Amino acid sequence: MYSQMIKGLLEGSILSLIKQNEIYGYELIEKLRQGGFNKVSEGTIYPLLLRLQKEKLISAYFIESKTGPRRKYYKITREGLEFLQDFEGEWVKLEKSVNYFLKHREEHSRI
Image (cartoon, rainbow, N blue to C red):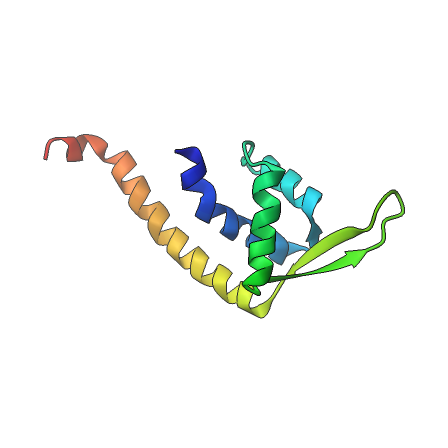
């Protein structure tokens, strides 16, 4: 159940993080975990990043690292900003609906 619920939420969360700062993959995963996505693996995130690139919602570039191999950084595109704005609007409506039913479950159980 958890994995199905977070699929769509990850896209919006990733785009939101990338909008704040251009970021490389490992750092992105760490920030997602700090934000509560503890069960999300690299095997989930990297294919999602690739798909977001193919959909032109993010772009990527490499920067040489002083401490190891070069890092692939991601930045949000204009299309990604538009997608994120739509996501945020839909999320507000969805969150309001779910919270309504969670807070009023006793009323609805009598129906």
